[in-house]
Image (cartoon, rainbow, N blue to C red; front, side, top):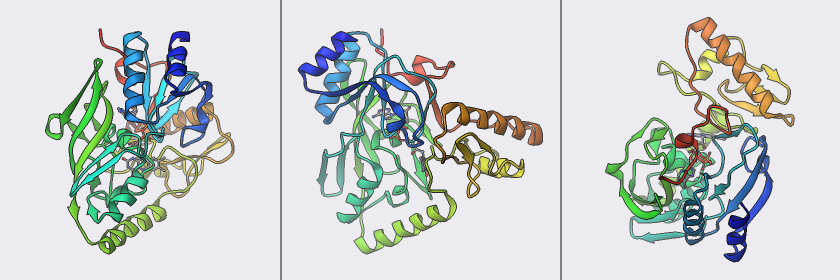
Length: 308
Ligand SMILES: Cc1cc2nc3c(=O)[nH]c(=O)nc-3n(C[C@H](O)[C@H](O)[C@H](O)COP(=O)(O)OP(=O)(O)OC[C@H]3O[C@@H](n4cnc5c(N)ncnc54)[C@H](O)[C@@H]3O)c2cc1C
């Protein structure tokens, strides 16, 4: 780790040791990262990844941590792309953006340029990279719809991957191990007013159906075509609290950290939810959130490790 810190110092790449991950995670809970690295440009990101690869260090790249529950202290470097937000190129309808830009900012910029195709995604607190890795979607829109290609780092090399070479599915993709550096989209022209109208409609729908507190969005995947919240609510668990984390009374698939909750509170709540839904409906809930530092963690799934 000393060599990596030396490299980061030399290249003036921002990093923090013993980083309190609750500052990063959208639910504001979690342990400590031994090393949190914040590249500010694509160039810095590539440099960092090249160094981590050549020194054969396990690491994980994250975006806005809006889908991550850090369950214990993480003793490998975590590279955080959320500060790489300003690299954007618009050539008529073709837009190339760095993986760290936040989706709400991106949607807003597209609106200002009269470009349509991401209106439904405006309320998702993701980075472009995290959204593509998870194929984020809402209200009939998904981030992969208008995607043309992505630029990736894989196995020490930087190259482009076309949309049709990637498998996207419901809230997921086969991009494990690929680090997204930037993405290119092809949008349609639309009147700014029409884009605003549609975006406002989706924002209103989201505000009506989802709670506004600190959360990770939906905790579980849809099951039998229904929101997991349907079964959680019918199991009588709406409003159940474990310490500082409570099942939202507005949307039972959201766990809200409203009183300084801990990872243990979250996990205890999820254990009860999974047990009750299984007992009452015979259904196994599948988490939509990703646990980082879980004892079941496998490096192929959770870490963008070097390849040998
Ligand atoms: C209030 C709220 C509402 C939400 N609503 C929705 C919704 O409507 N629809 C929806 O789909 N999701 C929703 N989510 C969930 C979440 O925003 C998505 O899963 C999103 O795609 C995560 O993006 P992120 O940048 O936060 O990624 P992170 O949570 O940081 O990471 C998620 C995964 O992506 C990987 N990753 C991140 N960046 C990169 C990169 N550059 N290259 C390769 N892999 C990368 C990480 O390693 C990790 O495996 C919501 C979450 C919250 C908190």
